[in-house]
Image (cartoon, rainbow, N blue to C red; front, side):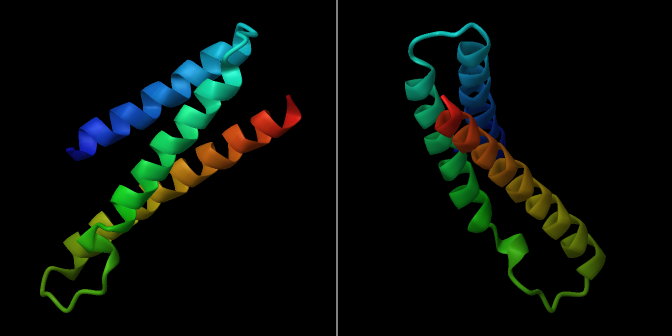
Length: 91
């Protein structure tokens, strides 16, 4: 899967869950679990990115920018996962 495909999958699963909660759909818990699975896949994908590894290259500024981007992706996914888990525990 590409970066875009895995992000789209996580975002669409998350949106389906949010819509189900908003509409009081009976399958919100199932959709929440699917969102968590998609977010876990997203986190696993971004954790394996080479940008997270230390680099000795001459292009450290570019590496640093990409590393920050990857870290932001991971922070977003972890925040959303925690939020979904919190919502599921309240219901």
